[in-house]
Amino acid sequence: MKSRYESAKDVFVDSVDLDDYIDLESSLTAYQQLEHSINKPLKMILLFGRPGTGKSILLNRLHERLKYQKEIYYFDTPAINEKEFFHKIFKVLTKKTLPQNTEVNFSALVNYCKNMRGKREIIIMLDEAQMYGPEMMEKIRLLSDSRAVKFIVSLHKTEDEDLVAKEHFQSRIWEVIELHNASLKDQTTYIHKKLLKKNLFEIANSIKDKNFKLIHKFTKGNYRECNKMMFTIFEICEYYDKNEPAKIRYDRIPKRIIEMAALKLGYIHV
Amino acid sequence: MYNIKALEEEWKRYRRKKIIPIIIGVVAIVLGTGSVVLFVKNKSDILKEHASPNPATAKSDIDIYIDRGITDIAEKSNEALIDAPIEIANVEDEERVGTDTSSGKKKLHIEVIDVSKKKSSFKEIEKRFRMGHDIDDSLFLAKSYYERKNYKKAEYWALQTNKVNENIEESWLIFAKAKAKQGHKNEAIRILNAYINRTHSIEAKVLLDKIKKGKI
Image (cartoon, rainbow over all chains, first blue to last red; front, side, top):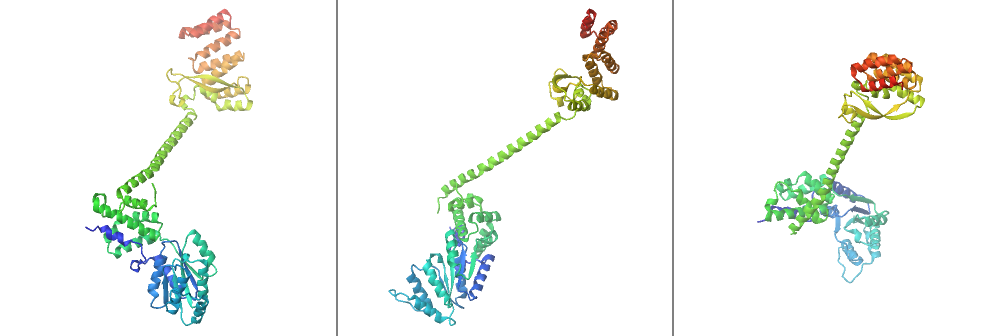
């Protein structure tokens, strides 16, 4: 028999699937800010934030919303090398595919872009841009200087990358949008809405305020960590439901299980 | 699926580890509070011991020595301090004194200010006696004057003591000794005989014998 917690567990499998997107106050603000920036005559926009703050899903959503209105492209994974990257750019600009054994003439590409100015406006979103080297970023900047191509660059914010971002983009970036971890209120809404979206009302109601506080304390409001935590909690619940039902109550999630999940994920240690 | 049993064990260890500092904290708070309460209690007991004497004991010998007038005199004149045992009779508030109660009398070591050399201090005590008629004051004056060989005044203050309370043996003895010292040997013998007939006091008999033999 399938446990009720199995469906709940699957809700929190980490993905950038737009069906899983949850409208929150903070993410809505970031989305509106990004949409507004796109409409400005800016060359480069930096989307900035720690891993798991929702950058990828935000770019994904923007792409999904604007793909029929604007010429917008989403590069979700960085190119292995410069050659591959410019092949992709070439394809976006010319809508033609280059043969594998050829290389893009960068100067010719820049000139092509300059000729496009005023005729076309292309938006390219680069996720995980910290993977691109400084030389490649310089070339991206030169392309954006043509004003025919606009780049939205998404970067992880870690100690080192923060420095890279500051040094490299300070003079080139025109607008920075920073994403933060969720507040307790936002995280509570996020978990609730995710469960309710899959009609898991009883399970959503079994998570009490003190549970949310504890989950927020462990995950610090990070969406990715929250997904991991909820997945683990429901996986433990699923085990008890199937094997030792006496150890679980369906009307609430015991603190013990949340702490066990935190131990499992390394948020706390013995 | 995880090894839930292992995870449960890990969680139990985690709880134990988390609870121990809480228990230690609670015990520390309880002990701390207890020691503070005890300290405050002890301090208040000490303060009670040092508080002003009970009116019921105000007329005891202690009053003579801790009287504010005498201590003032001592401060002014830098008199020598004597650490002497004082006998206290009729102490009603025994708990406040906190000494041995088995004999009904108490011995306390308190600082006694020797004021016998200062005329001004005697004046102060005489003045106080006239106001309060405290036999401790008059007896003190009688003894002090006797020691200073001022037998006339010793006789006078012994008599004053006797007027207030005729059962104070010391006043009889000082009176008799002062009379003898002034050459009124027969009168001293007559007084002592009268007192011995009434009380059969051994000390009075010893003194009588001394006077008869001319040792005083």
